[in-house]
Amino acid sequence: MNCGRLQVQERECEESAIVRIECIIDEGDVEKGRLCGGVKLGRGAMTTATTTDVLAKNFVNGEWVESKAARIVERRNPANTDDVVARVPLSTREEMKEAIAAAKDAAAAWSDTPAPTRGKILFRAAHLMEGQKEELARILTREEGKTLKDARGEVQRAANIIEFMAGEGRRMNGETMPSELPKNFSYTLRRPLGVVGAITPWNFPVAIPVWKIAPALAYGNTVVFKPSTLTPLTAMKVAEIFHQAGVPAGALNVVMGSGRETGDELVQNRLVHGLSFTGSTEVGSHLYASGAKGLKKIQCEMGGKNPVVVMADADLSLAVEATAQGAFGSTGQRCTATSRVVVEETIADEFVKRLVERANRFVVGDGMDAGVEMGPSVDENQLQTVVKYIEIGKSEGKLLCGGERLTGGKYNKGWFVAPTVIDGIAVENRVAQEEIFGPVVSVIRVKNFDEAIEAANSVRYGLSSAIYSTDSNKIFEFVDKIETGMTHVNSPTVGGEAHVPFGGAKESSVGAREVGHAAMDFYTDIKIVYVDYTGRKRESNIY
Ligand code: NAD
Picture (cartoon, helix red, strand yellow):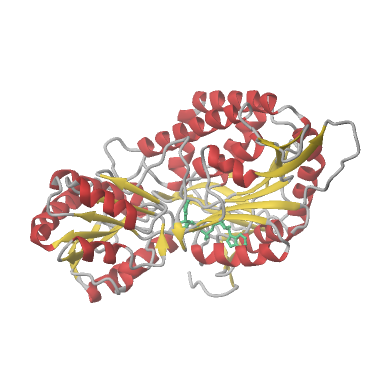
């Protein structure tokens, strides 16, 4: 297939129906040339899939509705491209407007519902999600490609987040302040923003939507959720769980579609007061600027280029395992994935030797299969990006292992790439500066601790980091000086707990933190109240 900008081809499928295949490079999750892992179809078109697929629906005002979109994209299983997981409508701007209007209509009643009552509904959602963990994890693995073990972990994390947020219904506290005047006091209330938009990526399609939807609802907002078109079924299942738990009609709405059209409407629409985005820094900075024109409250969690610093006094076995897990786990498709390892030169040869041994033992395959440690890239576009960066890395440093697309046997039907280690990388090299989002780690050798800090901080991103050392002085100095929003001591760059804030520094993040009680700062405004109980005319002005 010759993919170019809005080229249209026609071919006959086995059933001799005409299928229109459009290759586009500028829309939606199709924004990066993605075809959602398959072809883009006109309505009613037939595919050559070997399995039954479903048409993803929108969820508006408490009803599952079929989009009227003329354009539909296929989502295929990244481990087996014969398996069509879903067909996803690229909903229209009008359909997004309808969902926003439904959220607006539901806003007053939901914000008037006592916060502990909202919390009770969320507790039910947490229990329902735990009860449906296996089903949801299997949808997630089939759709996104991560291992079933990782998928189960993600669902559990999401359920824990909902559970924590349910408790926020009883902790939505303001403050009281003494007055400078007698018989006066002031206090603050936390009020919901109103309608909130949530735009999410494909790599954690359960946990990330949940860590936006659950706090938004707990604090009394109504939500319009635009998931990635690469993960429509997980999005539907997440919404269904909130619905089953008793979230009322209109309080949570889902619209499938491209970022460029439905996402953009969510950013522009005047009825939307807050927007929570997770995705690439490029899209986030565009969206932040465009939402600012409408004076929306916006938070963006974006890309990373996360380093592990390994000092000469580190426990090498731990450091090697953590680097491998951080770099190759989830196929490197985590915003917190380890993509650089900064290692003191006196131990670098031994460290690299062991890392390569571990990389070569990493079991790559279909995430559904027992024993598999790493699944495929999410789609062909992502695979091509990874392969491109590997080629760049080969010219910038020395390829030690991996470095290619995996083919043959079970690999032929999926988008698999080998765990890759590139040594001899300088801080200014592209593979040390740009987010790759694949199982590729660059080794940067440094002389000492100061050089290590400088190398670790030499990127525009600032999401996560880790240090491996047994010297507590170095560890605390690292924590002081590392320019990342999250840092780990003697543990991998990845992972976060359900009640602990999550977010980055520099160009990885803008706006208030997500997750944990810190989420209240984004999803609420502070209302300030002054109370005079003298019963008399005030004799003096405060100022
Ligand atoms: P992406 O930026 O391409 O897309 C994210 C979402 O934004 C999708 O739903 C997409 O449809 C939408 N979108 C795209 N263009 C838009 C526009 N013009 N207006 C409105 N919405 C638009 O990211 P992706 O490829 O889905 O995800 C991978 C990226 O996400 C990586 O950069 C990764 O680091 C980042 N990420 C960050 C975090 C974090 O918490 N910091 C977590 C996970 C992923």
